[in-house]
Image 1: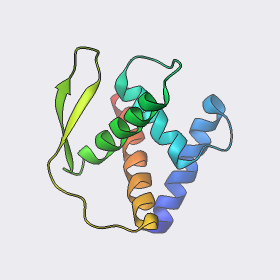
Image 2: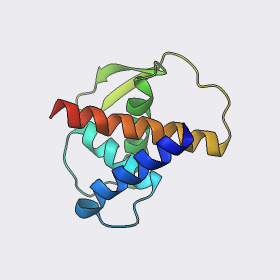
Image 3: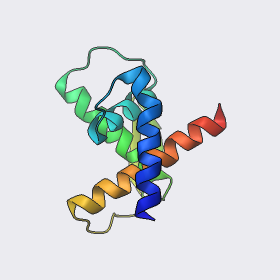
Image 4: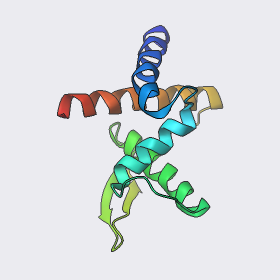
Length: 114
């Protein structure tokens, strides 16, 4: 399964690089997902907003597996999530693999929906 994920991850990077440049890393893609989910377009964000955007992305990515559920959006259009199921203890490598798998699935869904 890890080999398939590595192949899927490399293919995703190849698709994203023409628009976002070479050298994309996991954190950068998480940020892109967060900006997409926020739905306000790309603009200059404060450091605090960037952290919130990363949180939005992680919640959205893990919502497909039942860990988070969208509660709604606030008056400024920022989504808020609630924990549905606590994540199991994961080491750094396991966290990265989980997020990569969720990102690959996220972009598959975007491709299917468009």
